[in-house]
Length: 587
Image (cartoon, rainbow, N blue to C red; front, side, top):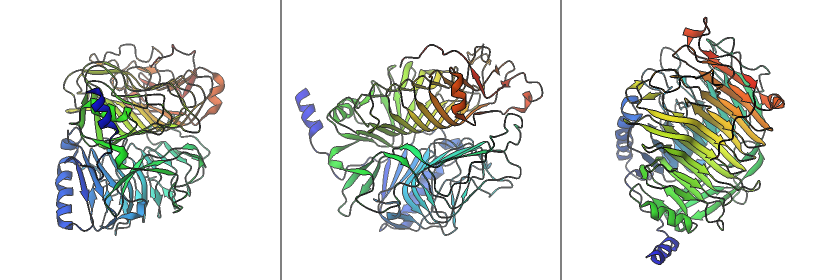
């Protein structure tokens, strides 16, 4: 009965929870050879590009407090989580410790969808390796020695198109190797470097980071020197509003807790450095008030738990949803959390959104992948009206895709639509697939107009990525928005007969469109690798208000396909132009 369902939703949850097989919990007292065997058995499947990139497996490795003399390779759809109150409670002291290795060809442009959080990496090599591109965050990590966002193991250093780290302390040097771009938010580093012989980088942004280099003073020269551009370095000393991702811990009695970091305004450095239990900026919730779901849990049960005011954790798996997961619709509950583990993947099956967020204050949606289904969705995620500057909402490590693993048509008009105000988007990637199961340019039909549409006011983004959509990659309608670091690539296959984009370029398409009158942007980049001639884009960034140009710090464009360098028959012509606002997209 409905009454019984309500009663069940209100009853305390089990603590510790019953984890499904996709969650692997390790203890430092376990036989290390058995732990090692499990880790490497999974990596043999999830590590290689061919078997891992579009695997249906999902995994989360949970490590209880202790010291682990192990090497933990992190493959696709794999997340490593320490269960300590502080990063140093879970320490890895193997030769590599936690590491994300480069692909076999030393090219990491397809190395996505992995994460490591809330741990200390103390490798005996003195170098922590994290060779990745988008959607592969490091968060709340303490690194002893150097942190390399690539590797020097091959004949030439590895390439990458990242990326994002936040709340990370590096005792040694942060080495960006041959990354094209990166956002370093609220970190602490002891020097930085990148590969300069010859350089091929465009945009390194340091936000609220201790030890960061000074701003370069010059913007990148990628527009006139696309082959070997020098990167711009942008340094901003404080983060206007900082909302860290929720995380989990376990106590000595085996009880689990969900930690909800509180907003920090004008933040600088890592949030956890001062070990003061009365000043750790978190709300701690016992798992009696946290519902742990699997992909076998009925959607009605998940939504009943959320309606009752509980937090929900989505364990690793693929969730086929006949209706949206609805969070934040009980306005008596603030700072409600929907937290995915192991790249929990949400696929709408009936043409709805996968997640709908209500007007309750301070909602956090984190660690989920949104994937378009065969029935057309207007949005994959929709954040409704509402908002409070003192209690902002959060989208953290939210990754969306239209196409990729699919063999039949999939579509969504907009991947992520934010109509709420005072929302922070922290590491969000919206990707219309360009490289699918059988390689690049081999995708099944996939339709998507826009990656992200922002209609809410006072929305902030840190590390926003949007790629290959058929119309503007990003549309920002809300007033007083702020965007720090934007990486994008326009539709590479425009004008291909099967791509259904015949007038690309001449139709005024852009990578970053601002219809608002008041908007601030920092490190906004629009790239293009067009395969067909005729895709002449007037500017990567389009603003409706000419005065907005003065509030854009170092916007830039980068044409990547050398076929058009001399002829100019396809490519982006300039960084910014002014144009009348287009019709507002209602989400």
